[in-house]
Every structure is written in structure tokens, then in C-alpha cells.
Image (cartoon, rainbow, N blue to C red; front, side, top):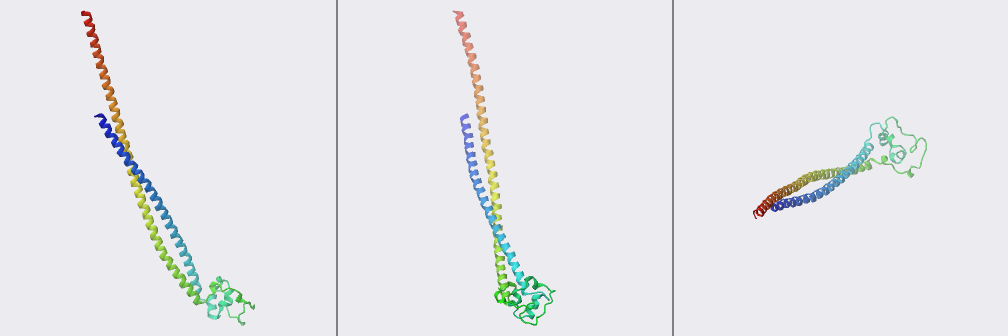
Length: 238
């Protein structure tokens, strides 16, 4: 009966250990999955930041084109477009772009065509700067830049969705990891409890066995004493 009880405890320990090992394997898998989802989230966040940076650059380009295409009133650029035909190929190649938006230069047409402070230069050797493009070219550039920005906006929407999904996957992985960790802790506790139950039972069995041995030895001692007394009485009778 005692051995049967020990066998039952050992079976409980074995079953608890099996569950504990299985939980530990699942926890390792959950840890790996969590690391993967965090890596995907970081990648998605990086891609979103790249798109946003490209958006900002594209927006600045659009604002620059619009500033050239739609100059403010009384600016040098507004005057050149109104008063100086083909200004892009002459003074437009020399003037600093920041001067085009100033309103305090009081520009006037010179008597000598093609002159700049009385000096004639071979301006055909100079490349045409961005700010000196014709209105048609600027409009074309603006349309292209706006189309690029629209495409970047769509990319941002996709990148934000990917980041949202990646963050959701991380949260789910964290929940799963916590759940399995709790199951593992419970399995460890069950295995330790089963081991303690077995140890207690074995200790009780040993204690009971020791008491039975002591009782048996005491009884045997009494029998031996009685037998010795009987033998002594028989010897005296003879």
C-alpha cells in the first residue's frame, strides 16, 4: 500500500515535469517570436521615418518652386518677368536667388540691352539656374513635385499601416509570452508540490517503519526475557 502511494506521487511528478518542459519549450518559441515582431516593428518604423523625411524634402521643393512661380508683389522677380524679356538667359544667370524675393531693389530697365552695370558678359557659358527657369518649366517642375509628394503620401499611409500592424503583432506576442510564462510558473509549482508530497510521504513511511521496528524489538525483548525466565524456572525445578 505504501509503495502504491509512492508510485502515485512519482507519476504525478513525472506528469508535472512533462508539462513544465513543454511550457519551457513554448516559452522559448514565444521569446523568439517576440524578438522577430520587435525587429519587424523597428523596420516598419524606420521605413516610415524615411518616407516622412522624403515628404519633408519634397514639400520644401514644392514651396521653393511655388515661391519662384508666384513671386510676391514688387519683388525683383516680379519686375523681371514683367519688364525684361528672356531675363532668364541674361541677368537671371547672375543674380543671387535670394535677391529675387526682395522688394527694396527698385529695379529699372537699362538703356543698353543686355548690359549689367555697363558690362557685357558671355552669359551663354553659364548654366541656367533653377530659379531662372521659364514659368512653363516651373509649372512642369511643380506638377512633377506635387505628383511625387502625392506618391509619398500614399507610401506614408502604407508605412503607417505596416507600423500599426507590426505594433499589434508585438503586443500579441508580449501577451502570449506572459501567458506562457505564467503557465510555466504554475507547472514548476505543481512539480515542486508533487515532489514535496512524495518526500513527506516517504518520510512518514520511514518514521512508521522505524516505530514498527522499535515496537517489534521491544516485543521481541519481552519474549526473550519471558523465555529466559521460563528456562530458569525449569532449571530450578529440576
